[in-house]
Structures are given as structure tokens and as C-alpha cells.
Length: 254
Image (cartoon, rainbow, N blue to C red; front, side, top):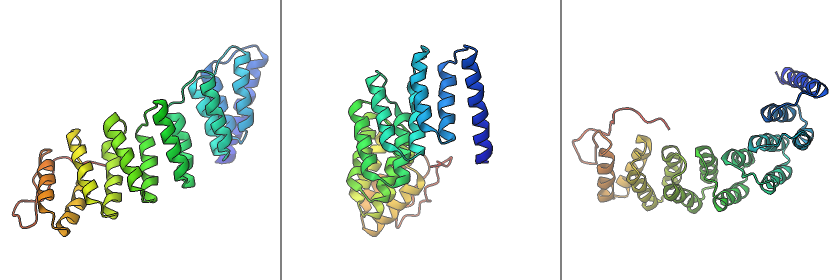
């Protein structure tokens, strides 16, 4: 399959060269496709040369074109060159978007590189580029893997304050981390923050918190959370209660 794909892109590169020989100027979409293809056949440097060639023919690279070239360097494990292109974007007056950052965050996730991931997130925050759900999931899963409670809560609080990312998806991983680390106060606070935003925590997360609160004999806190969950429909079964367990209409996939 890889050989077939390589041959396919080599044919496309030949077709693109024939366009140039006939003085037919490709548009930015065509150039971007070529840049991505050169990366797939292991030629990230040649793809970067295409960025320069675009300008010579009056077709200026956009964010998508740079993203394709940055992805090529990440595939080649040349993260320094990827950062160099991102910095070049800024000098050219282009702002890296969430996709730009996600290309790098995915690479750091594969490498299990928490420090680089977190520094990149701080850069996003400082430059005003709000993470999307994919960004948040790369980060929270890595924080969960490294058991970094404070950093995970910082990410969560940023989400709550600035309104980015999916509360449903991120909260499941966050609650797993908090419960594993015995941070029931933090789990309760995050749970209530989510409810205040009109977002229903998943049944799986609620039941896990419920079990730990029962073991810790925190009946008042559990009753409060149960009442909040009941606002979304269904009924709650507390310790010593005859009410049925929480069965909300419609299951939430996380």
C-alpha cells in the first residue's frame, strides 16, 4: 500500500511539473496538495522549497499550505524544522491556527513528551489561539498518563473560563485522573462547574465519583451531586435509598 501511494504521488508530481512547463500556474490548493504529497514520499525539504516557489509565481502560501509542510517535518521527526516553519508563518503575517498546533501536539503525544506539549499549550494561550477539542484531548490524555493533577485542573479551568473544547470528552479523562489520585474535592468542584455550564457529566464518571464518595462516607456531597444529575432527567439511587439507579433517557457517548 505504501509503495502504491508513493508511486501515485510521484505521478502527480510529474503532472505538476508538466503544468509548469506549459506556463499553467497552479493555485494555492494545488500547491498545498503537492506539499502534502511530497511529505508522503519522504521529501519534506523539497516540499518547503515549493513554499518559496509559490511566491516566485505570485501564489502566496496560506496557513493550510504551511500546515502541510509542518506536518511533513513532524512525520520525518524533525520537530525543530517544524517549529522553524511555524515561526516563519508568524513573520510572514500568518497566525498559526488550532490545526497547526494539533499537528505538533499529536507528535508530542506519540513521543509521550509532556513538557513540550504543555509549553505549546501555553504558547497557544499567550497568542490567543483557542485550543479545540482535539487539542484538549491530546493534552488531557497526556496529563492523565503522567498523573499531573494541577496541570489538568489548570487546563480544565481555562476551558471553563474561555469556553473551548468539549466538556463531555475532557471531563471523563479528568474525572478518571482525579478519582485515581483520590482528589474527591477537586472532582466535586469540576463536576459542579460542568453542571453550571449546562453540561451533563457522563453516567460513567458520575457512578465512579459516587462509589468513592460512598466509601468516604460523604453523603451530603453525594446527595448534592445526585440532585444536580437529576436535573438532566432520570432518577438517582443513593446508599440506603429505595429509588432506582440513574437511567437518563439517551446514552451519552464519550
